[in-house]
Image 1 (cartoon, rainbow, N blue to C red):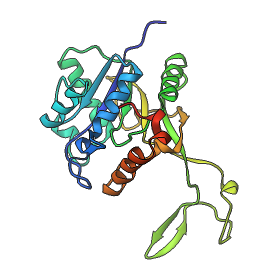
Image 2: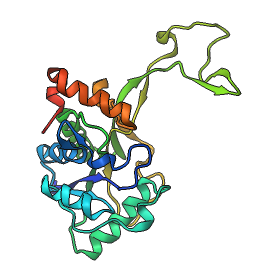
Image 3: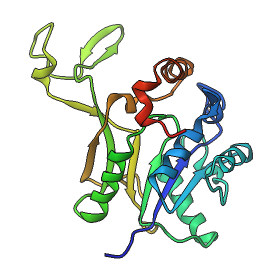
Image 4: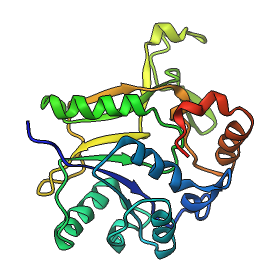
Length: 238
């Protein structure tokens, strides 16, 4: 089997609204994007590329060991841009800058600080070895008894069987995603179903599912690192 070319991509645009400049905000003295860059280096990818629209972000990413061979195009960096837009931009820029086209991308969202190296390495190996899987993503167990709120009234998003209380075990296990994706990269065929329909789920510790969305999330994760580092030591690479 030919060796697959694997790039780690850290998508870090500069336009965060909820927490301005979130991706470069210092978390325990280190810019947030550096956590993903250092993980990617530990993973041993062929390239570690930060996709950003900002010269300032690019300089910080390069300082911590990532490559920034180009800046992200405007259409892939606006408030409504999705991953498929960034993927299209990468495909065009790889060709423009004459970079080798990767077989696999490891998508490392910088708002996730804790990652399991062993699990993600296993996911890459399984994806490379088994063409049946269209992609892989890390998942952690989530609350299955969720409700929507309509005009102040709770509506179950699950079958509550007409009961006020129901055991989680009776609903089954559900998972949340969005921490880390492992993507088969096809530069000629990128659409909004870029992960495909047969995605391998890689279960991770719930600590690795902690996402920094706002200032409170930031403070919680920083507190864990500062006050209970032993709890997350195996998931930190800085």
